[in-house]
Length: 72
Ligand SMILES: [Zn+2]
Image (cartoon, rainbow, N blue to C red):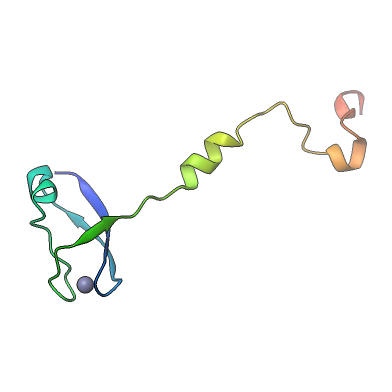
């Protein structure tokens, strides 16, 4: 069963729960705090930001060397 990162729209509680995909699609997952079943998924965008910035062409020392550190 997959894990879901969910946030309760009623009380704002964020929780991680393992549930069947059918449970999620049929809104059978409930907030453990208030038992509300209107939940929104939490998208952890760390990976998205990382992949955007994964251009290895930029010189990491560009502020020190002006981008010409290849010949030190
Ligand atoms: Zn709740």
